[in-house]
Amino acid sequence: METDVNYLLHRQQMSLIRAQATGSPEGRAAYEGLARGYINQVEAYRRHNEQQERLVVPAH
Image 1 (cartoon, rainbow, N blue to C red):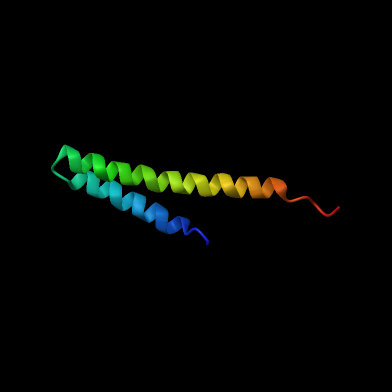
Image 2: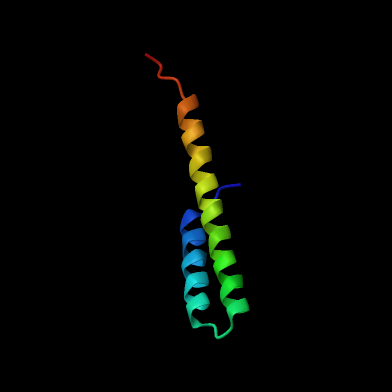
C-alpha cells in the first residue's frame, strides 16, 4: 500500500491547529499526540525509502 505523505502532513498540521484551539490541557495533549503520530509515520516512510534506494545497484 502506497503512503500518501501529503495526507499525513495535512493531518499533522490540522492536529496542531486543533491543539492550539482547544481549551483543555487534555485536549491539547491529545491533538499534539496525534500530530506526533503523523510525523512518526512520515519519518518511517522516509527511512523505508532511503533503505530501498541503498539497495538499488547501478547497472554499470
